[in-house]
Length: 278
Image (cartoon, rainbow, N blue to C red; front, side, top):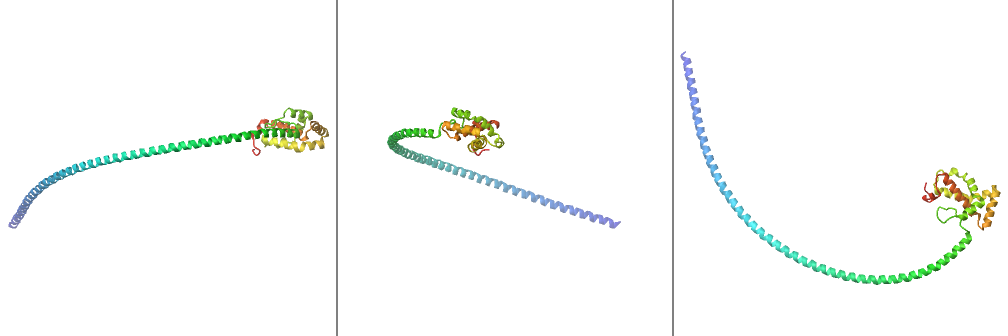
């Protein structure tokens, strides 16, 4: 019993001592914090004051330098404008002088060129007129020669059987020869042998087929197989003073017209096609 009480006493003393020590330490820490806070505040106040002074000094110095820079820039800009205007005036004056000189020189050269051109054109006109007069005389003389040649050729080949336009169409003389030898009957006879060949031909090719056949085959066939019509053709040719070939061409034209009609073409479509076209 006596031992237990001593233990309680010792425990209480230990706790009291620990609490007292803690309070003492806490009190020292608090006083240290207060001292540190005061020192920090003093330093912060001093730093703020120093910074404000330096900022004020910096602001004043910057304003002074900016004012000096502005004044210097204005002066330099004014000098630049004045110099630029002077140079521009000089350039304008120089350009005007050069342009005036160029204009004067150009006008002088153009006047000289115009005068020279007029002289050359006058000489050319005179020369051309002289040559044209000579050419006119030559053409007149040539016209007489051509007329003579036409007469000679006309006498050599006889009257034409068709017009001069293309495609060939029988004229009145060609129709007279056709009637004299009954050419339509002969044309109808010989087209029957060509009907199967024209399926893939154009009008121009059909015309060439008929003309070639009439020129090379009909007269010989008549001589061998149709003496009556052969004699009729040769007698007509003799009477008209022409070759039988001219009558064969009449038959060829009639054959062409018959075959074109069967193929659904008019004679005027012949010239719509070139020789090698399908």
